[in-house]
Length: 311
Image (tube, rainbow, N blue to C red; front, side, top):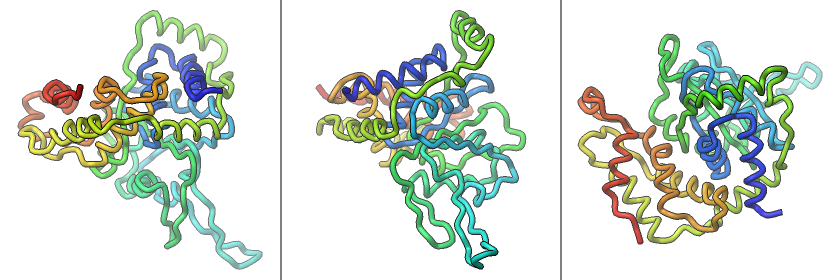
């Protein structure tokens, strides 16, 4: 069975639960296939948690764990802890929820910065150093974090270093009236995520990840990505620009998106389609730019228009 067929089955299965959001579903799945992590920022009730659970249910053999971030959550609640075994009088390590294939970090901004930082090493290096010992996070390790953009009471803004660990940030938004009516019909008796069956194996997802890395990315497109990300540096409205990690993420996500498009090469249009999701959340705007109503996504859109496209 072809790689494109596996990708299409996975996308169709998730879209059968998350109605009216085909573009967002494809971008989130592409983020997973690229080996990155995604931050879903949107209003309550738009389907952020449902999207994460649907992806996990659609993959057989994938371990899914959820952490509800709260102010009293500790780093050990995420990473794990060693506990004394009274029978052997030895300490035995009990791994935390970070040792999984898909991790839902629900309302991540409700935990303290100390707890948020527990994910930095895991997301950036696919490993966790606990009590001086390094533990590798092998295979599929995908973090889907959610946060509410309008509620600030009892929350801690994610620091720039944490935001930079997310390959993408996107939102779901509200669906059309027809799609919302279809959601009501879907959940008249049961929730569709409860009846969703697996359509791909964990090994097939790992094959998709390997295939994405082999998608052709020309030398001209590499220079285009570097120029696009580099345009954020020295920009008069930007206080903190995007780093080379943004360039890497933009390349890898566009390669993964090409897999879902059924292509074995990346086009400039694919890079432009995900540029705002990959770059905007890493930028910090100048105070005067924010006060004048500018947004990071708006600036990225302007940079896409002004950066020459390779032909």
